[in-house]
Image (cartoon, rainbow, N blue to C red; front, side, top):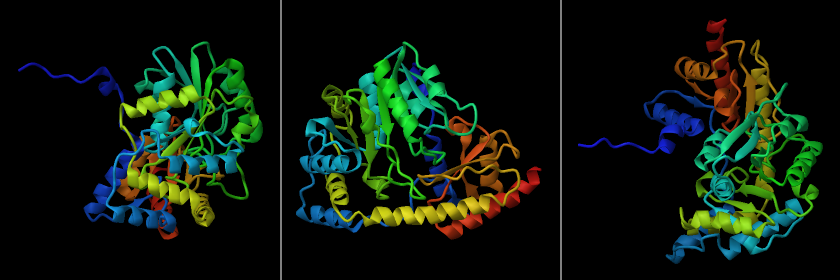
Length: 389
């Protein structure tokens, strides 16, 4: 029998650490263990009623079929309206691509723009999938680490740009830190990308989930022609509709959106008919649900930060958005992977190691859970950490 081997690609691409944590947490709970899951990126929040009603109505038609590969006209119209409201631009249908989540939007973008030898620049801490997705597209990930704190400066980013740079990825508010890049930085990055003639992908999936009266700067306000700018977004975080798997990409570069659409057509073909109907309803329905979710998350954040600040030797950066806190636990253990495993075994609390986000010594702790679980989870962590000093 001949040896069967996998591709080099399959042998070099790693698992998603966050999805791995979720699977492990589910398995432990299934075993009856009193696990507290503070590692997830899924708010405990009911789906908007408009989306639920749309799903039921669609199901009752008994017509659940293929949809246009790049998205239904109805959902594109809703995305265009959303884009006008929050970005001051009204894209034409051919400037919009609807995908199976914002993750597929980003992957389509990378497949359409990046090839062997091309570099894609992004800052640490970064979303766990960035490096692997760049490598899957054949490119080279270039990570820019801040000299201090959790946010890079424009000078640090500029220093990483080379003749091989094809794109910049920017996520604000940032997963995992919850920090927002300010207007001066966003303006500088947009201008830098245009000056260097490289693409800029703005991962705006959390752009409305902000606290303390903060607002995310609008990158479109600083773009001259928008040809190199792509905005990625979706319904997963904003409405707590993670299960719909609907995201979108918007750009004034029609050729780019068309190329991204071709990548999609040859992979997933099209999106779920039911999901697109539900996402349309969510975007056009009562938007008070976003305010309610933000209010709940802000309260949860306050509870989490207050509890973490009680633990000696832990440095906490107060999140300005998202639903994550990225805290420095390096005084207890420099290897965040081992520390997260220790807390899972000894405290039965699931968190995500900072190593997965490009910054070891940190742990990403989610405040998606209910407040009782947040308090109890951090208290368990505090008890377990005493044995490490």
